[in-house]
Image (tube, rainbow, N blue to C red; front, side, top):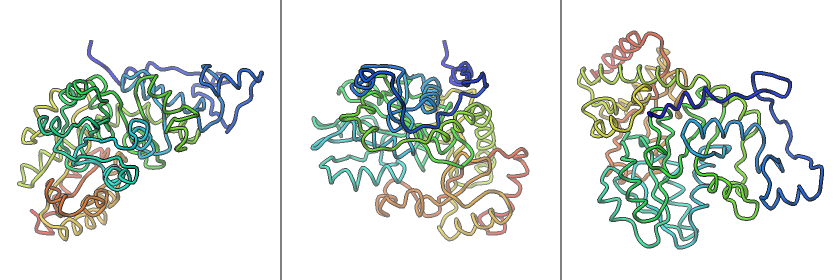
Length: 399
């Protein structure tokens, strides 16, 4: 039976303490025990359903984690205070001194910086490879490799990872495949394609209102419990804890995620097709011209479309900046990083979200100065948006 992630979210039903249709928010940092033995057992990890301290877990965080695990089809999930909190905890849990990571050369700048600049301090090294070439990926794996890491749809070049193919390589070498699915919630279900751990920045599409930061690790019960272990759990000891109020607000926003993702995808697909017809260099996984389109067709949950992210190359950083400033002036969106907001957000990733990547490596991977990354909004009249964007491009001699 085909996996239906939105149905899994919808089927979750919680009652608040007094019968409310929203679960009650746990406004406590610490929790009491009726017996000293129960407290001891909880510290030792031998009890379930008991709360110890909100850095470890809280009812509100567990409600949100259960919803996210249902969405991704994993046994359970741990929420964190940011996407980077999720990424760093997973890597630190799986790797130690002398270990090695194989990852995509095109990943979020913060992830790149953590792997490239921070982990070598701990004698953990990373090979950055073209994730779309499975033979290259496998050739990079060594005896010391402990993690194979990728983004389902890469930031910012929108490369599509062959999750099933990568999973087969990971299983062959007995290492976990970790997939960041931030760009494609509902669009792609990595765990159903063989991923062992699925990560999201909840800040983006899942929350959808650009009013908080958050992250999640979706995986097996064993792995998620290991992250929360009071003795050596990276999630517990690094302290990236989500606030209960934020967990409750994100859970509410998840109820509209399927509606929002469909509209983001519909609008992005429309703009991508029109601008490609106008002769612009456009990248969007829903276009037949995209190198990963055939693979995307195999992996996508088609009901939700191909995602809300589009890139357009306008030729130079000067033109990119002029266009973004003009579009912002015309109320077409915001010159801002991040994604998943109801308004369109645009930025030049080479000088913003991917600025941690050295210029020579940006050139090698095809990240040009003129590239603009668009997170397409929920515009009601996308034809009007297209006409106004096109007029901006004509005024600036881009079209």
